[in-house]
Length: 77
Image (cartoon, rainbow, N blue to C red; front, side):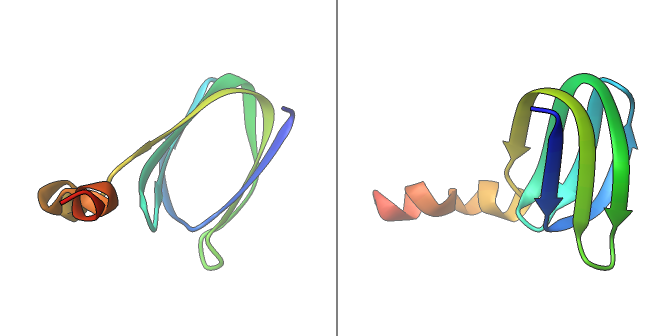
């Protein structure tokens, strides 16, 4: 993959050419890869556009969702 367009971004904690750490409306997101470049960041619209070789995208839950167990915990109760 050479380009990635993400919506729901509320903040970018840090970025380098190998990792981008973002906050989204659904929790934290970690984008890993090589030669990553932020092409466009519009926090007012919640948009992020990256270019580079993306090797992994990881999401972590919001803190309040961890305490309640999240969607699947409620589904299988």
